Image (cartoon, rainbow, N blue to C red):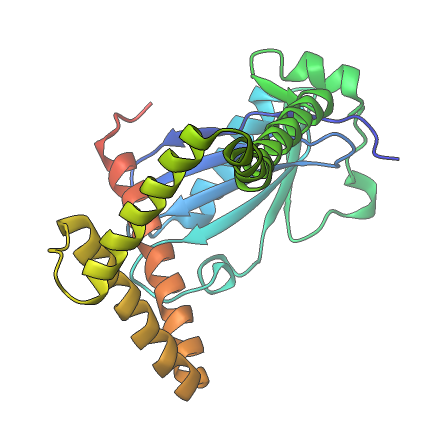
Length: 254
């Protein structure tokens, strides 16, 4: 059985050349996640990381794991810049305890991170609960069920009802027959090229032909298709990151 949880809203703040993303402790977790997204070349990354951890540890009294995310055009890993992979730390009686990569046994954090305590620590943050998500999922399931019922009625029941009414009512039957003739006539004109296609139909046919063309070549070269798909995913990721960075550059430094 899934234990009820609370997920507190993440915080993003702009800095000079980077922005920070703070993800609060999740119910049952051992630490908060703090990520430095660096998008401009910086020389003092290690000092920045230690300063940021101190700031957030004093702001929210929980253990923190700090990670560094390179969003610059340079190729480097965290260890290349600071000699370590991540930073750990917390505040204890106003003093900051922090260590790169791992704690000494004597300084491993001991915090009360119960739901009740986290509610007190993150009293200024919005949150989402397990119960709220469960209700949302239940409502979405009901909506899908209603849609399915509606489609079943439209596709299955209505045609049968029309057929029954057609047998019992000559007038209604004649109307349905005339409409069927009209649809068949228009379809015939399209097949024989007698009816001018609308712009929407032309666009839809063009899109269909392009999809069939692409599908044909993807089947001929599956390795190339997989490579192209991965390249597109990478382009989408980079474009999303660039959009995020541009939005951060436009914000005022807090």
